Structure formats: structure tokens, C-alpha cells
Length: 392
Image (cartoon, rainbow, N blue to C red; front, side):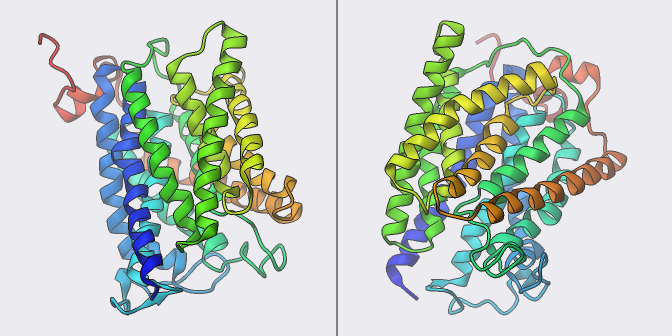
């Protein structure tokens, strides 16, 4: 065990959990109407709790328990055989488990943004649970757990280069989000602006800071690669924030706070797969393009495809992760065959499995709330609480 590496990953684990709670919850919560903000908090918090238990039970062993092509087996279910002295590389394995658990938490939580303001709470829990086990954990095994997309697998000796989750996290969550939104259908009223842009900014700031653990921690060591990953993460986020705001100003005559910080998230998602392989100038290039590309994809999904992906999960996270994965090859840090092949394999897996899970879960519990509940808001109708006292 290396004490410095262990200390660093302990901190990174806390930072990645911080991304979901409270970062993502606040970011998404501020973007919805006031009558639905608590439902967003409830979704994020409940998913965090449920994924933690499922990761212990079978998620971790599916992802990291063995050497199958898509399945790690059940040998480490409930951390069987793992003690405080067990090592994963230079780290205590139980710490590696905890660090990876925070990724298993935030990935299904990202999907929340696609279906807010009209989704059934039971469906959220059932779909998230099955999706993490059937989509996320096998994809994690394929790329990070020694499966068919890793080194020496389907695409040769180097395998797919995905440093911190452009494919594993962002492509899978983005595609699933688009599919859920498509099946669910649009909200009855889509014109209401975010109820709290300030809350959105606070959440985005927390995500930015937490992303240092997400990308830097993926080096699994306190070393130069981790330091560079943190540096390029920051620079990509900064560049994308600026280009999003500039493009918004050119197209619409004003740059908004919500737009600026959404650009931040686009830059963070886009640098994620490349963060361990590129330098500062490449980070500026990736972020600068992402701020414009992801903004255009937001408009494309809403206006051309006409899918109510409410908080633009696919356009920002999905497209950002896919773009960053391609840029790994474009910048010479990975092979075109492996990067494009990995995107294709995971994309097909995610589409088929996610659609099947949506249909199965909808047979068990209602996917959508009734019209009265949607109009009145999910907070009071489903959870019996309000975020704000209206007469105070």
C-alpha cells in the first residue's frame, strides 16, 4: 500500500460523491420550476443511497470481480474475501471499491435531468437500479475491468482509451437519458424558465470542484498524471464556459448565467475521457469546441428532434463524452479504431438494454405521473413537501 496514493484517493472519493450530493442536485434543482425542486433532490439522494447498496451487493463484482468479456462474475459479491489488507494496485481494495462506487452513483443520477417534472418516483428507483447493474456495471467491466474493450481485447493491445468516463459515464448516461425522455414524452408546459439560476451556478461550481476528484483521482495515484488531469480539466471547463457564452451572445444577443455554467459542464464532460492523455493546449481546444458543439446539440435535440430532454443531458453529457473520446484519437493519444469501435459497441449495448429496461419497468410501475400531479408539481403531490413557503 502506498500511503500518499491512498490519501489522495480518499480525498478524490469524497469529491466525486460531492459532485452528486449536493452538486448535481443543486444544478438540476435550480433548473426546474419551484414546485418540482424537492423531487429532483429526492431523486438524486435516493439514487445515491440505492446505488451504494447495489454496488456492494453485486455492482462491484460485475465490474471488477473477474476477467470475462462483459461480466466480472459474482466472486466479490458483498465484498467477499476483501479485507482492510487486500490491495488493488497500491490502494486498499476497499478504497478502490468506494471510489468506483461514487461513479456508479453519479452515472444514473445524471439521467435524472432528462425526465424531471413528470416522472414517477417508483420508476426512477426501479429503472436506475436495473440500469446500473445491466448497463453501467458491464460497460465498466468492458473498459476498466479487463473486459473485451480493455487492453488486449477486441481492438488490440492498447484498447479503448477512456481515462475517467467519457464512454463509461457520459455516453451511457446521455443515451439512456435521451431514450427515457423520448418514451416518456414532453412536459405539458415547457416554457417556464429555471426557478433559481443562482442555485444552478452554485451546483455547477460544486461540480467543477468535484470533477478534480473525478478526473484526477482516475490516475489512482498521487502523481504527475493526476496533476495534469486536474489542470486540463480546469482549463477545458474555463474554455467551454467562455465559448458557450460568446456563442450565445452572437446568436441571441445576450450571454446568460445558466448558459455560462452549462458551458462549464460541457467542457468538463468533454475533457473527461482525454484528461489523462493530453496537455493544456489540447484542453483549451477540446473545451473551446465543446462550448459551441454542445450548445448547438441542445438546440438540435429540442427544435429538430423535438425530444424533451429537459435539462439537456444528452446534448451536454452524451455529446460531450462522445466528442472527447473522439478527440483522444484526433490528438494522437489513442487509435481511431479503438475509440470509434468502443463508442459503437457501448452505444449499441446502451440503446438495446436501456429500451428493454424502460419497457419492463413501465409494466411494473407507472413511468409518468398523471396530469393533475404534473400541473400541481411533484413536490407536494408525491413527497408531501414544498421547497419554499409561498406566503413567507
